[in-house]
Length: 103
Image (tube, rainbow, N blue to C red):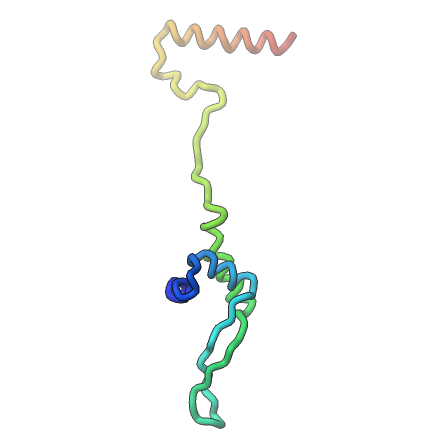
């Protein structure tokens, strides 16, 4: 429904959702009137629950979840693949860096 209404208004779906979230968009609801014994169109603003749902639906467009990235700040993740010579060089570099940080 959001896409259909957004197309009518020449807006993107996420823009339509933001308008609902901000309470700017009005809706036509069909409500049965027992007095008139027929359905009537009632113009109304979105409820708080509808505004919250619109905010949840629009959120991924504006703040996508970041994927988890694994990093190794020590640089030791590839230690198993190092040759003996490269391993000794890495140990020497780390030892030198540790000694310089102490001075």
